[in-house]
Image (tube, rainbow, N blue to C red; front, side, top):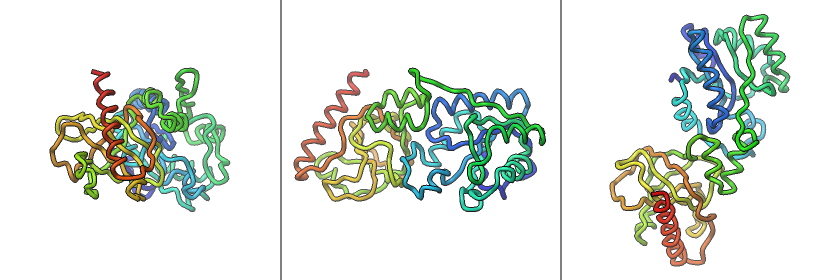
Length: 310
């Protein structure tokens, strides 16, 4: 899969494709249905597939960061897209120039001149361009003019409700990891590089792999039973805390994972952590000793969870 950063990096070889446009946060079952729809058309037309996305996401740009947390950071999104026959990702910087671009100009410069679009899949409620003036009808009219086809996204529903990033976020915040996993088609996952911490866990017999999340907000917080990938013996079960560690006056959002029966050195490794079961919310304890007692209980609950799955 090729990542193209910015319209200026498009080349003649990128001309002629089938495409879709969106945030693709989480790359959930609804997104996967769109990607499958795109792959079918690409195969029949003998063309590559292109996902057009934005950084930051438009909602983040207009609200200056006061938005719900992302399910996936950009790198995690790319990792997920690689699994679904995506040939190229065109990432456009969502800045003042793009925000002020008229929808007709977006069609001409990005879709036609830049990509040589032949087939586009978007939701029938898709809006784009300055003032969100561009819509599905405008794209259809442009398709007739420039020679590309525009198709509706196939709706994907689960238990009577539409699968969406918002619904997954709500399930995660409610601690319903099972429902979130059903809508994602896999357990909810966060990735990052293992960094050195303050080693407090080692002093109480619970060494942790520390992963700085580089997020203003996280869609999950609290204590979880998890599995880690990207290390020897994967998946390795463990217990994890996501939050700011109020008992030890932490401030940065951090994922701390204590792996069961594991002692290998993994500093610097890029790892993936799957969240399988929520044990409790994060809270402040009166003393480090009280925190230690709670960690023992948390680890016991996580081990019991894994034993129940065996």
